[in-house]
Length: 223
Image 1 (cartoon, one colour):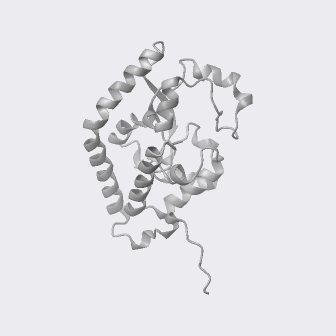
Image 2 (image 1 turned 180 degrees about the vertical axis):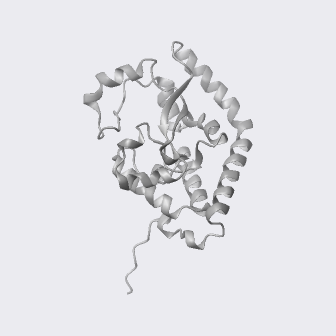
Image 3 (image 1 turned 90 degrees about the horizontal axis):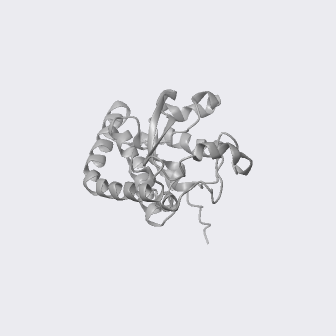
C-alpha cells in the first residue's frame, strides 16, 4: 500500500507567483477590497457598536468607551489604533503592579484571567467585537483587513529579521490569528507574519478572512 504523504498546511499551498494580480495591481485591489467590505459592513456593524458602547458605559461609567493605543504600522510608523475598552479605567496603572504575573516574554504582556478585564470586556474579547472600531483605522488607510497585527511597542524593539513584518500595512486579522495560539511568543508569531508577507496575494487574504470568520463563530476570538 502506497504511503500517504502528510498534508501541507493550507497557507503553504498558496503560491503568489500564480496570482493574477501582483505588485501595484495587487496593492490597489487589496485597498479597494478593504474599503468596499468595510463600507458594506457599516449598516450592520454600527447598531452593534452603539449597543456595545452603551453596555461599556453602564458597567464602567468612569472610563472612555473607545480605548486608543499607539501601535506600530507599516515602515515603523506609529498610529493610534482604536478598540472598545475591555478593561477598568486604570488598567495601565495596574499593569506595572501585575508585571510579575506576565506569562509571556516582555514586551508582550498577557495574564490568564486578567483581573483588569470587565465582564462585558471578557465577552467582547471572546467574540473579537472589541476590534470593531478598527474598521475606521482601515477606512483611513492606517490598517488593512488582513496583515500582521500592529504591536504596541516601538519599531526599535524589533531585531533585523523581524522588521520584514513592517513592510506591509498591519491588519485587523492575520495568519497567526487563525493558525496560532494566544500563548505564542512574539518570535513565533513574527515567523508566521513573515510567511504571510512573502506569500501574500488576494487568495491568501480571502482565505485568512474566511478562517477568521470561522474562528469568531466558534468562539475562539482573536488575539
